[in-house]
Image (cartoon, rainbow, N blue to C red; front, top):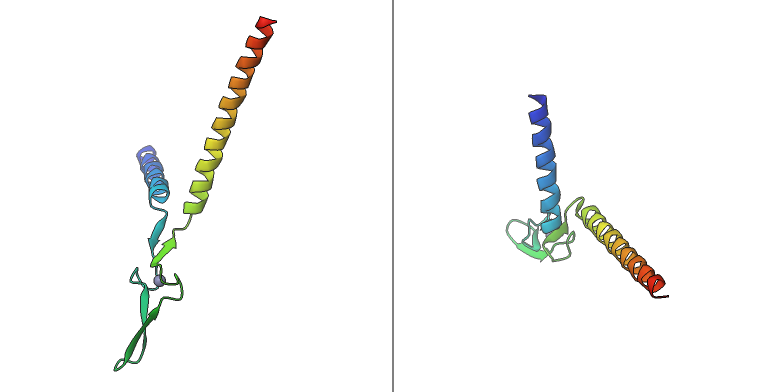
Length: 98
Ligand SMILES: [Zn+2]
């Protein structure tokens, strides 16, 4: 029972991280993506540019930057390893020719 619960939790976390990678931006919480907030009085409403998102209507979701940096670091490390393997292979080939 508890194993199933743990697996569900891991699956949910993986889905959440994937959604953070695919959709790093969410709607602005202040203007709910409408880009303007209503100021002024009830009788004379005055729409102004949202001060939180500065009129973009989006905000970076919490943790998306970390996920993207992690993916970039892993990719860079894999590329470095591939490059090292390639260099090693060409070196041994050069040794054989000598
Ligand atoms: Zn906003």
